[in-house]
Image (cartoon, rainbow, N blue to C red; front, side, top):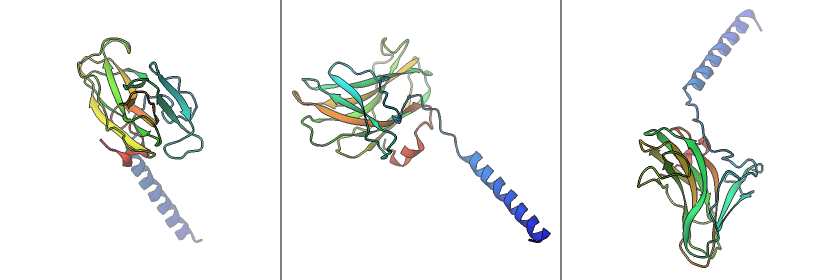
Length: 206
């Protein structure tokens, strides 16, 4: 290689590096998701607090087929129709602030119960067990009535002005008595705008 060719090659590499750096600085950073173990890369589901007649367990079924990750399986075993699910205290929020939340959800077929699943955020004033801050505390995302397919639940919301805490709920809403209904949840997220994982963005359904 001649000196001229070497010089031109170095110049081209410098220009290529500069272009790559400029592109990376233009890509917006993903906002911080405050939900721990949101992808269920570990089997720990202890952060989610189930009500009576609900069971939350880890399952190896992953929304994107990962062999090293799974999901949370929620079973509604209430003897009567009951609309509730696992909850997690998300901690401190800014009143009037904008937030994104959502998850992937899947309802297996062949069940005796009927109903639907959804994701919600409840706003509180002082702590995650206190009085709800508004008379319309929950912001529900699109429900999942289908079977055996992963569907995206997503929502952009504004926290009430007096909200200081937030709790996320994974709802399994059963509408028939004496039956049971199960569903899977994965890739759960909550945070400021831009929190939605990149892997979910082409699934967005609001």
